[in-house]
Image (cartoon, rainbow, N blue to C red; front, side, top):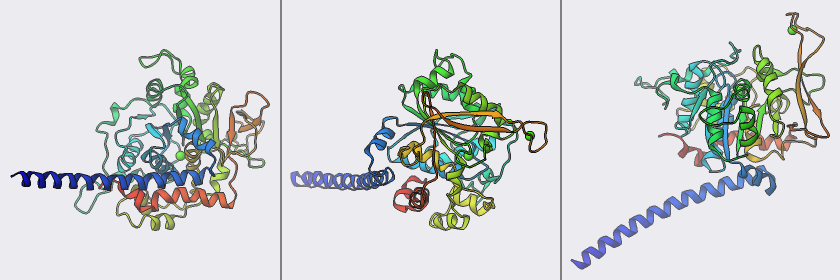
Amino acid sequence: MKTKTNRWVWLITLFFGLLLASCSDIEEAYDIDAASDIDAASGDDSGSSQESSDAKYVIYDTDIGSSTDDLFALGIIYYFAHHNKAELIGGIVCRMGEEYIKLADLVNTYYGFGDIPMGVERNGVEDPNVYIPYSGIADLKNDDGTPMFKRSIEDYSTLPDGWKLYRKLLAEHPDHSVKIISLGFMSVLAQLLNSEADEYSPLSGVELVSQKVHSLYVMGGKFGEEGNYKPGYNFGHQTAINFSIEFLDKWPHSVPIYFSPSLPGDYLDYPSDEVVSDLSWIEANPIKQTYMNYNCNTGQRMWDVYPALMALTGVDNYIGDIAPGIVTISQKDEDSDGDGILDYQMTFEESSEGGYCQYQVLSDNEGLKEDMKWIKKCNTDQETVRPLINP
Ligand SMILES: [Ca+2]
Ligand SMILES: [Ca+2]
């Protein structure tokens, strides 16, 4: 009897021992992998990785559902969050319409983040162009008629307005600890800056941003392009411009903004056939299904990836030697399209004092290769990506 009991104890110990050993192997493999990537990306500059780990809370703000680069930017954010290099505390969809929050929910769920709080835009940019209408992937079905992709949110009408969710999340987190990654319009951020004290915080929106936000990473602007001062799609599109002006007027100058203008992203090309081929090892994937069901050869480039990379790997590799300055939007004496509205221009000016804006410069060839590696990593690294995906 005694021998039998001992044998059982021994067997159980062996079983749990083996189980623990295999778990720690997996964790070790992840940590080594993630750490080496981050070292490589930050050029062994401990300053920048330190910087990025100090403020680990991340909120994304996306106009998902038109250009596909939002998908890849989210992929990078999920990757860092899965490796405990960032904590994704919430997401905002600044493009109005239920199909877009559905899409964000689907992508969150697919990558294991279906439970993060989400906020929506209800008074934002009216009817912005949709270049690639891939929100339709939410309706894809398997052969047996079941939905191809799961979602997590039952009733989208109960979701808070984005600016309200910003207030809640900022109020709940430590001072200067939150990084915001903006991949779309400035509407929700402008509404946040216009907000007053509420049940979440006695602070105004501007005060809340000054106190809680560590830094903002934005895709927008044409800085670095000779003679091109257009605000571009995110800042200048139709009714977007008024939100952009308001955002720039009210943003507190104590909180740095890192712009990723169009130019560097213009050089980051991930051709459609390469995307599909990189994802051929997964049967159903939101990016793969987007590229298989829609024509993505629309001049699509990986613009949105850059603000995510700057926020998560540090800005040192991306910001040149341009001194911090100020970004403004004004009107020129010219109406180039003859619609009766003077052209808007968005300009960056270096400032010897009080500059709080910096912008990303074009990477050299080596840098572009490294940047592409990050994007492809979320699609091709089977060992790290496979366990992130719902079975
Ligand atoms: Ca975008
Ligand atoms: Ca005009």
